[in-house]
Every structure is written in structure tokens, then in C-alpha cells.
Length: 179
Image (cartoon, rainbow, N blue to C red):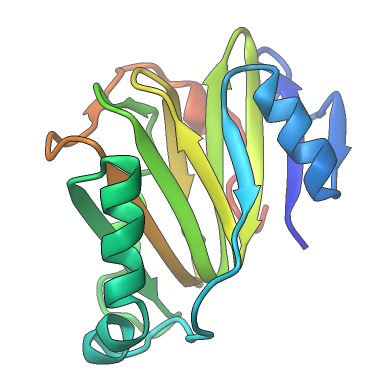
């Protein structure tokens, strides 16, 4: 089950509220300009699946979604705990970053954590299959796969420009996935 913890940015250890219902998560995030939806996905895959299997199951569907939403770039996080680069891939997204274009995070299988820093609050989503978050350009965020990853997550972007680090240390003060 997906969950959203809402913290004051000065209170990393104690959330103001924790939500577990999709409608509550959607309305809370909509109030700060983030679109959250749960999608029906075309196939059930496991984290660690082969790229060819992913392409066969999601290729045409993903192409249509990207065209419909104006996304031109994608990055697939497809990891299980035995992935040889799991720590390197995790570390790459643990610091707060911002992207100059609209982006989206689609959780296809397993679980991961996406944190958003907006209006003096931090919204920590533990996402699962079917969760789609659309982030407007300039949304400060960080992403955590966990120490023992089990995730199949897709990041889509309206630009091929990589996110830039903000230089802020806020992400290090908040609990990581599994803490």
C-alpha cells in the first residue's frame, strides 16, 4: 500500500500526518501542485526483469503515454538487492535535485521512496505499483531505492536535461527508505 508522510521541513523525524488512501494522497498533493494518480498498468513485471521483457510488455504503451504527455526522455530503475551497482545507483539520487522541465515518476513494481520539498514541507511518498506523480518544472525532490532495492520505477521528462543538485542538505536530515 502506498503511503504519504507530510513533514514540516524543520521536523524530519515527526510527520504532521500520514496518509494511506489514494484519494487522500491525491488531494494533499494536488493542494501543492503535484498530480498523483494510480494507473492501470498493461503488465505485471518483477524488479530485475530483462530489458527485452520490459520492452515487450511496456514498449507501445509507454510510447503512447510519453507522446500524450509530451515526455521525450526516460530512465528506468530496475533493481533487485543483488544488483552489482545498487549502492551507486541509490547514491546518485539521494541528494535534493531540481529539474527544469516537467517530469513524472511511475512505479511499475516493487517499492521506492520519492520525497518532494514544497512550500516549507517535505512530502515523502512510499510508492508502489501503479503510482504516477507528475512534478512541475522546478520541483525540488530526491529519490531513494533503499539499501536492498526491489524496484521497477520509471522517470519520464519533458527534456533530456539531467536534474541539477540544489546544494541543500535537507535530504540527509529525513529518514531514508527502510529507516
